[in-house]
Image (cartoon, rainbow, N blue to C red; front, side, top):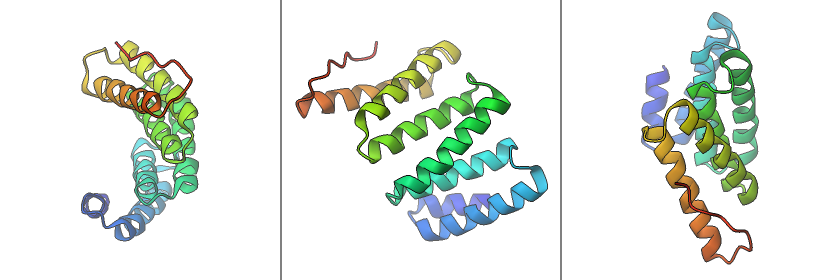
Length: 150
């Protein structure tokens, strides 16, 4: 069912993806437990579905829950926890909370450099995102100094 939900997500069929992700979460919670990594991934997928629809509050609520659970169960340096951090930064950005988003993405980049290494795809993607956000802030005339990430 998760694969079908992901297929709908990839096709931009948000409502269908949302319904299936919700069913996957219900089943996963009862069979695997609320803090199982697969269940948390399904919750993150639902949050991403909300984010794609501009449903920022719902996305943030789920993303915070997923990130905090992953921190407590997997540790703050686990790659899945860092992915949650990255996703939450995107939600903050979507809500217009640019400084909050940038600050969280900075932490994500630093952690990913330490944990994964500077040349890993996830690290590079986060660095490039952070640089794009900083360039955009400069273009918009932000008074903040945002050095590009090396």
